[in-house]
Image (cartoon, rainbow, N blue to C red; front, side, top):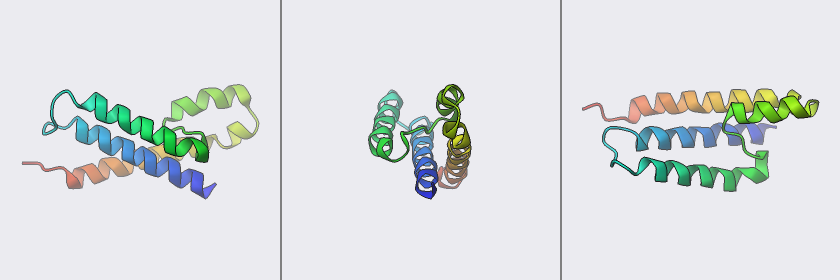
Length: 100
């Protein structure tokens, strides 16, 4: 369970850092969709064997509600880990972004 939590948190952090970097004012215009798409592809290729990939709490909630049981019991992981990863990415972006 710890590896799933860490995987979801780290890869959500990575995705949000790519999104924030690709959409910043200093980024080259027009490349954000490519960077974000390639990042999402990488995340899914790496994390499907570990957690079946969520990186999006809403994507996990629907199937868990329909499946029930163990899926609902594990749903907290697919909400808390991505939210924590996103919050850490937001904080990291504030400290790494050049505000000039």
